[in-house]
Structure formats: structure tokens, C-alpha cells
Length: 337
Image 1 (cartoon, rainbow, N blue to C red):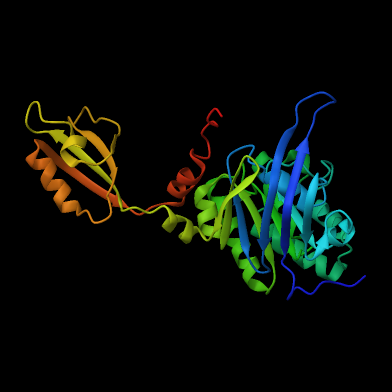
Image 2 (cartoon, rainbow, N blue to C red; image 1 turned 120 degrees about the vertical axis):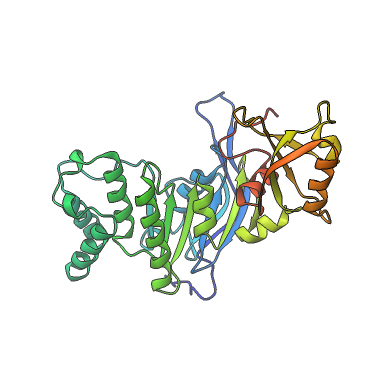
């Protein structure tokens, strides 16, 4: 079998990829993927960002040969995930958040060694790699502890290390920091970025519910919902695509009794935030329109009978872009169709 050249084929590619589930005969179909197209290049950290049920994990499972597509085509490292599944498996690694993998009677070190042998890693390569990974995930004191005696967070860190044991060409991270504390998650994110930079061509496909994680790690990302790719670009470009001025938050107090509503005074759409009864103020949130000057809005408020007690501004975030594209936040319920 000829091996595709990494210089000519993408790391991961999907063409009109579709997946339909049916629980039993006569039950309605659930369409998890609606003919998606993706192209991920070698050396990228690529993210899939979307609400629950968007199709992220289904796509990951197809790319990992754990699910067959209903129709369409998926290739990993140039190999078809259905017809050449064995070639795909030689080149990939997978870390899933919340996964309970390994054998409880084995220790952390024994479990990692076992997985290294599944992949046929020579002992002289496997041993130092395992020790380095144990150090990275900060499980040195637990290296000789049986897995069934680890905490949930410690088991997840071990699962994370297991994904790197084979030194895969393409690594799939499905919610990898789920259930981890903030410090552990930060260390592992930094390790992934370092690992990608260490050798040309290493590729990561990440699914996550953490907006900041996607923004920090991903070279490009696709926003998916209801089995469709709604947008695909760099985080910076996605932010720019929905920009319309700075986000402004004002703390205001009614200075003149019976003053007109602040939104009428400003002439722009506003949202009221939480009141501060101890200070007798309210929070006012708005986006500064193109061409508008913040100083002019502040003067208009003062002249309209409102006293401005505090001002803060921020640039458009990835979350702002996500909400504009999808129509709701990551944790929000889906709107009725």
C-alpha cells in the first residue's frame, strides 16, 4: 500500500460527511452530522466549538474509526477511515474527557507501559517517554498507585498521558480538561502547545466547551451546531467578523429625578445589568457603534440627567462571536425550531 505524502494531503479531511442515528426500527432519525466539510492541515491545532449535541464528538469518533459515516468521506493522514482503518489507527491518539480507561488493578506506570506495548513501542523509547509524561501530568507520587485508588481528576490526568504514549502523528482531544482543576488544565494546555511545536507536522484536533481554551490553543476553529459547520477561521478573524465597536459597561445613577431612560438618551440599544443597591447605581451594557465616541455618549448621559460613576471597556471576545454566529451561548438551551 502506498503511503500518502504529508506534503500533499491534509492531516484530517471530511467531505459531505453525514451521520444518522436511529434507536430502533420505526423510531425517528437523529441527524448528528449534516454533510460537513473540513480540512485540517499538518501542524495545526484545530478546534471544534459548539453546544451539546452539535456533532463534535460524533465527528471525532468517525475520524478515529469508532463510528462509520452514513455517507460522505473522511480521511486521516490521507487514509480512508472506513477502507483503511488500520492505517489510520497506527497514526492517531485519542484523549476523551471523563473516560474510564485502563485496568483498575494496574498502577499508573503499568497502565501506560501496557498501552505503549499495544502500539509496539520499543522499551528503550517507551520507558523514558512514560516517565516524562508522568512528570508532565504531575502523577509522580501516584506512579505506583493502582488506578482504582486514584481520584477522578488523577484518572483523567493519566488518560491524558496515555494519549501521548504512542507519540501519534495526529492527536484527537475530546474535552481533555473536563473535570480537571484550573492549575492542572493550564499545565496540560501548555504541554499540548509545546508538544505540537517540538516536531513539524504534529496535529491536534480539539473539542472543548471552554471558550478561553479554544481561544488560547487553536490556530483555527470551526463553530458547529446541529451537525453543520457555521463558520471556520482563526479566532482573531472570527472576532473581527462580528465586531461593531467596543463593548462598554457603565455604572450609572439617576442624577435628576424623572430623567428619561438611558437608552433614549443615548439613542443606542442597551442592556441593563445587575443593580448595586448599596451604592444606588445600575449597570448599563452597550456596544459602541461604529463612528461613535465614548466621550460623546458620556456627555449625553450627564446632560440627560444621569451621573456616570464608572466606565469599563473590552474588545469583542470569541464568546461574542460564537453567540452572534450560533444564536446562543455554549451552555444555553437550544431555541425552539
